[in-house]
Image (cartoon, rainbow, N blue to C red; front, side, top):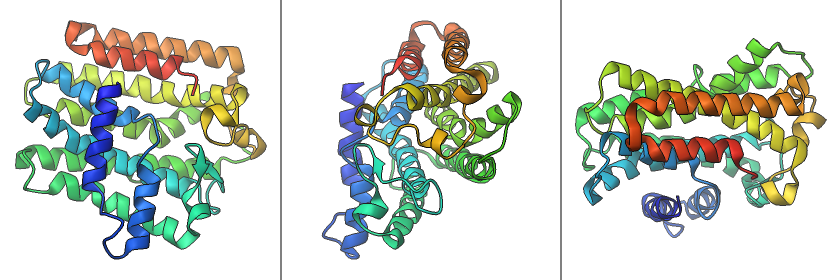
Length: 294
């Protein structure tokens, strides 16, 4: 993990516009939002899925994986910036530091999100990369679906409309499959398409794995929000409860939510069995997502 995290940090530093390039304040804010913090779970998933199809990955293959990994991290960072805005969750702390609209202002935060979203697709579409055109188009489509109204943005809309409502378990799952799970699922699918070495059944197994860990990520987030601390998480804890948002903890209870996360972890591992040792990193990431404390 540490090696890939450091690799992605270096790549993001290179791919983001420099703070000395006009408009300097916007570019500085973009770098503030992306660099120097975060677990980089999504880039890690891209690389781990790529390892399934290229287990003896060369530096060339790793460089190819850096492109979708950085693109998806740009989308994730943009979603956090917009999530924290006063018109959304109105939060003041993210990754242990003031949110972008607090450090800069609301207008810049809005533009940071817009610019990071555009940069993600610019990176994938750039013909100077070592990805072939067919792969780039496939990845653009996967990421666009995951980020838009059929994915993350749609899930956020459902979340905002659900404040104060009592959702059923299927309704809650539907919301989080889109809001949190869609982008995580896309990471796995994008990494797996770095090479044409998988058949349809193998792609389906990886997609099911992505669905399980995407949902598990949110379940664990809800658990941590209920029992962790602001200092540990780097963001305000208990805010969902204070805002009367439906969560797995307030619908299922704390212990059943933890058990559900464990079930999703087991299902994720079952989906990886067909790949043997090639899927070791994906298995370790499933463990990390469910067992993490931050």
